[in-house]
Image 1 (cartoon, helix red, strand yellow):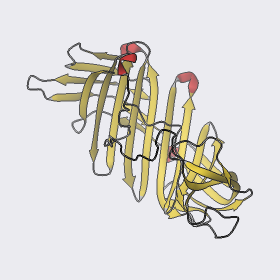
Image 2: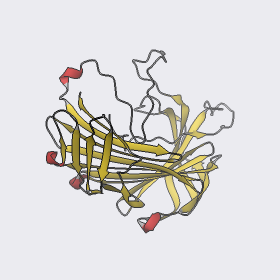
Image 3: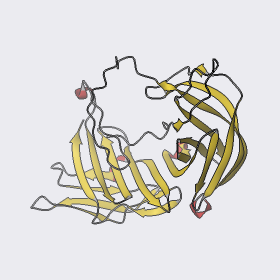
Length: 301
């Protein structure tokens, strides 16, 4: 089971376009979005209908680690982006088109197939928790996307599929025709959901290569939704599991710290203990162990 891909997020916006010969996308669902870099962070802003999102990402390639936090608030997207993000900032920017609608060159399945460029003008102010980033923008190049979603060549209009519920922060497993071509892997997972709060931790190790650690956190406070995720690469020895899969231990590397252990009692019950923490953008040293967590240890393809 893979962590949610950090680099793939498209913001959808519901917006009715004016009717006319030059507006073939009338009455279609569209996207407004723009992005910029600030002090080593990539900030992406977008919205759909009454939802506006600020996405902050940091990728430290040399240290093999990534971090991302998404802030979701209610707002307006007709002709621009307007919303208040309680405690961290606000945005009021109008969209001014500078180009014509054209087909997206490389359209990924599920993403809009038409695009027109433009400029956002107005005011954006953002101050992350603990002031990990403060950003101000009055103009930014962006785009509007719409025209319906692209489909993969193999879909052939058949919408039948196996829908699997998503655990907090992670995708359902993909279906493979030839799983034996992949090396087996050991996977340690622990997570919980209690009301609007959810946390999850995952460590995976294949027959060769390093350990991949990922943690995610979801929460809603004062009408502000947050989704945070961090991941890092660690030495193979930092994840150990017994041959019978009755116990396992993991040692965190930055942005993780501490250790955690899974053990199984004679009656089959599992315990997940330790002082393992994860430091997210805007929320450092979050506990990744405790009685609320449900743990799972497996080995397979």
